[in-house]
Length: 225
Image (cartoon, rainbow, N blue to C red; front, side, top):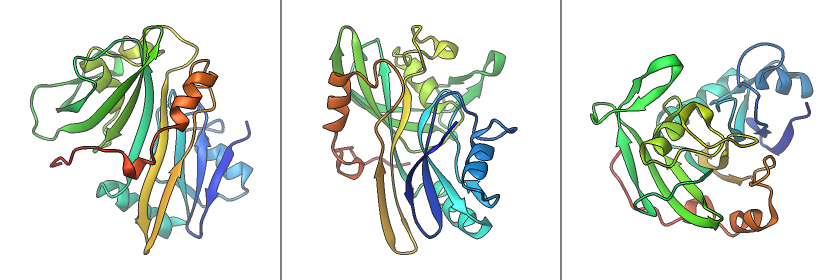
């Protein structure tokens, strides 16, 4: 499978991850596919996406760059925006979801009422018609299955996410849409339209996504993380 190169800089490349690829693993993983395609065993993924999630992934060029960029993620200095499609309307079009993530059955997670070490996500949504909504998700933490669990917690599971109660579809409709960060004094901002899925690629929905403001300009209320 050919991996799309979105951008390249001195210390990293940015690629578009297709659905169904795991970030790590064997010969069929995203990491091994990227290393083989670019003929470079020193490319390191600085973060990961679930196999069912598509979108932007940063690969560092070498261990030093990997350490730098990974620290930016750990220190929450990289702004991330995801897109999702759901079939339920939340009580509020925009809001904040916060709570501890707790293990549940069969490898799933659940959102607790406690906030000792909470996962935090802001969301905004708009109607797509036909009973579907487009969700813009801004995570401030990076917990396992965070966005999928949080969408379920507001009774709006992601379309195609069978693990967390989403209606059946041709894919899980979660996409890593944008990344913005500063590295060694250079500001970087990237956005990438979804490329897979009947609804993500439908002309009217694609047009709505194209009208989104740049990730750094979205009017998110300030919160304490």
